[in-house]
Amino acid sequence: MPLLAGNGDDAYRYAFERIVLPALERFRPELIVVASGLDASAVDPLARMQLHTDSYRFMTRAVKDAAQRHCGGRLVIVHEGGYSEAYVPFCGLAIVEELAGIRTDVADPMLDLAIAQQPGERFVAFQRELLDELAASFGL
Image (tube, rainbow, N blue to C red):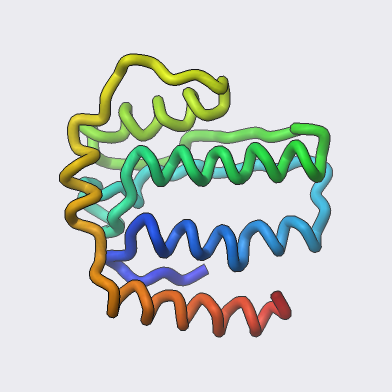
């Protein structure tokens, strides 16, 4: 689904809640496979998005819960992208921790900065409006 450059945690959470999870509910998959690109992180040089480790935790938890509900927990997550050598390991660890149901002592050194740089209310409202239009076009 199209998300504008500069989008952050709110847009991804809203997209999951408004489109991704309802679409999974409708589709009723037998297996969920996720191409887990980490290039949407706040410090990635390519995608220009604003995600952080808590964003990846949320998406992992949401898809893990969906897999439990719809396909007996059958879930495959494959790492396939992310170009920030400094931040990809923290985002990847957040995913692994969420999958394993544990939390290590490794702290995200950029989390506070990534949260502080999230888009403003007007941008968030505009992206939500676009996502609502997309959801409506899918009948969700």
